[in-house]
Length: 241
Image (cartoon, rainbow, N blue to C red; front, top):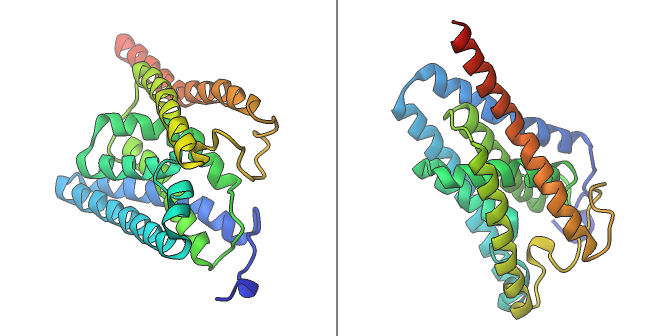
């Protein structure tokens, strides 16, 4: 498809709405399947299948980028150092190893950050362009994995998970800031805000980074709140019984 034939991305258009619905519907369906099956073999096959889709999608993307932009631009822009690229790696670890730390990080990082990227993506190309498909497999896959692990694999974060996720995010950002200086990059959008329709980005650099600290912690607390309330209600029910 030539550049002139690439369909533009239509924010909240039909294709965008479909992928947002699938991001929730797919993990919901997979969760129902594994819980009704009650079989570790079925659960392993579903986890491996989802991990394979995510891994193949990411490897193809990295290969495509390397071949089309060259090594220098790949180093500056396409290393797996954006939060969503790191999220894919965590998702694959979670699905293949049931890794607890990977779950904690993808629960908070993915549901707080990647969900926003799905709703207001930094994307120019629409369906059925490759960039559209790759973008939503990556970002939708992160959110889908977090939801599937929570409702299908029955994993849950605790308050220490929230604190760890927030601290590790800041440690990660500090390390990636050094990489940005070395390669003249903007990983994790630490030096320049992304081009997006998100209303959450309304301050110039560096003030939006401070705003993200406050916003991020607030979203982490909101994500933990249903888990906390569920445990309190469960404990109250057991005492009443």
